[in-house]
Image (cartoon, rainbow, N blue to C red; front, side):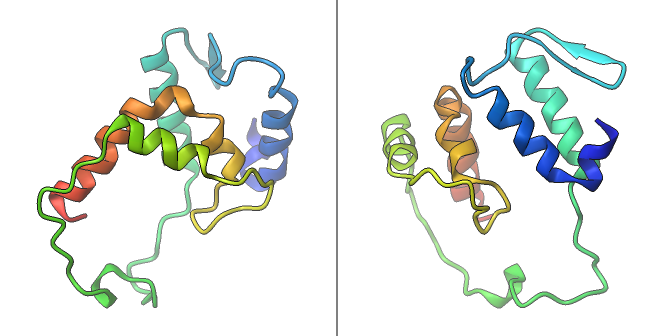
Length: 129
């Protein structure tokens, strides 16, 4: 587990080795913590990524800064679970990392998370963030 931070390839090798089983594990352990419910497993993943995600340095300007893009009013745009399912099914499976740093296959194998994804996308659209 400690080498995953320095070698992300180990994480993706582990993910690939588990593809023959359910996309969502029935239990997950990380460090001294274990999770057995979908909500607890999700929270454990969130904690892992929060601790290991590389945060932007506020002192470094980025050409992809939110301030560099015009404000867009999405009005009452609201995505349905069917919209999310269709978008996921249209993703081409590839081991290459996408712009967000995740391989498309990871998202494609997360169809059980359509409802939470819909909530996140709609919250983002309604808040403009």
